[in-house]
Image (cartoon, rainbow, N blue to C red):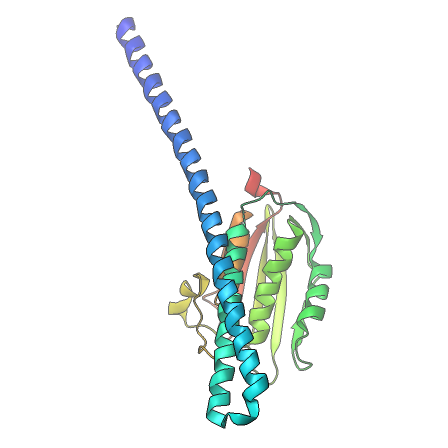
Length: 257
């Protein structure tokens, strides 16, 4: 009986060793694929951006030298082409930013969110009629300063850009939930249909017409930043009007744990 138990134990240990070896091999393969994907992204983006710069230069040349010779329809088409090229260039920049998140060791430091929001609002410069409401002081978060700046910039930019209300309001709050902070960014804009809640976090997805839309990367990048740091982001289904974006942020540097 003892010999049988020993044989079973040896078989289990051998199986565990095999699983451990396969797991290590999968991790190595995963890192290789990540590296290859990153190289591919940079190469493709570099080549495409070179062609986009050439198209932009040609359109600038046409607009400068032939502007008076083009009729209104041709000028409109030329302007549309320039806008589309710029949008594609911005999308490529978004892909590069998306691929960089989590690739390098993040520098985690205490970041005063009150100071960060003040800085971002000066940069984003919302119109005078926009009312930015922060009922209580915001906390200091532990995270990469650049990623936190990007996160709040994407969320605030979305809230400002798509809110054309005559009395536009944006409210930012944070709730202390013991091991993490839960943020809510609420606006009184047009809102998002419930059926689209998941889609807006997917890459290149936007609910706006092509002429008015951004790159469709803002919420995608925000989602990746939050999840990389161990948080979760979602849209509040109970909001009666406008859009309310919620996300959690751990009080410790969870992405290394």
